[in-house]
Picture 1: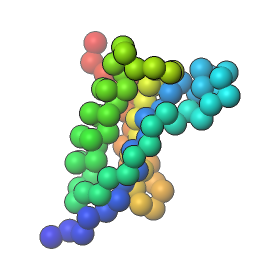
Picture 2: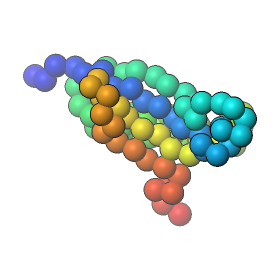
Picture 3: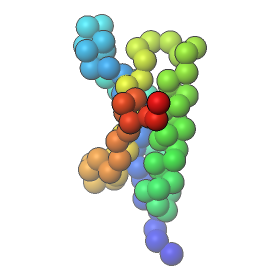
Length: 84
């Protein structure tokens, strides 16, 4: 069995909008411990879908990324990657 690893999931707002407001483009950040990066990707996509919901306040989410414990980005998904 593989050991669990910590992944950091960041939901990102548009850098232009966040910068205009003087805000950090990271609108939400969570850490998850899981055995596979696939499970972290699924969790990231769920968070991204919630962040894109119309009732969400603040800048709309532009992307989500998963960063492993070593600080390497292992997954990224943006609103442009969503099927039409």
